[in-house]
Image (tube, rainbow, N blue to C red; front, side, top):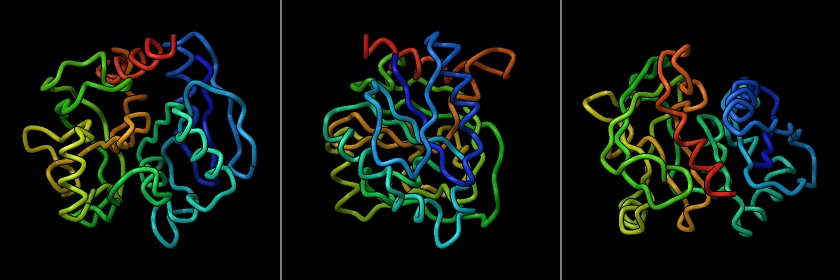
Length: 222
């Protein structure tokens, strides 16, 4: 699996993502700086977590105007798999590649803990190795993870089966509408989620519930 990881000033989960992809796929990912204007061919493009541009203006807003975003947009249109985790999710919504937006946590505090997630959709490359309705555990670490969308958008993403993950069993850490933790684009090749599956791929990390996401991607591109 040929994977690219996009780096922005303030990215801090890029190395975690490299380690996860390398361990599961056996192939090292390539780092791409955000000012590049061309992307190598790839099966998967990942926008990792962190605090791009220090979250100034609005989380992900400045990064969404970086030169590389136009290339990511073209790749999405061509069906390339694109994964945005935490700040990556924020960037994808700010760039219009995913519906809705992410606001400040309802508590107005940074949250770092494990949460429970329900798998809400499995008809896509990202969650294909899970079972619909399955509950998994995954860590979160964010200050602006409160997902919001207007009524029309919410109805559309429900009708199109675009909700991939929901917070379960009262563990919603940020106030997200309908407990949404991750959403897909309409074509199902772009996923954004606030939890960090790359940090839960083996028992030494405290759990391996994030591993099937990467295994599913590997399976999808073979």
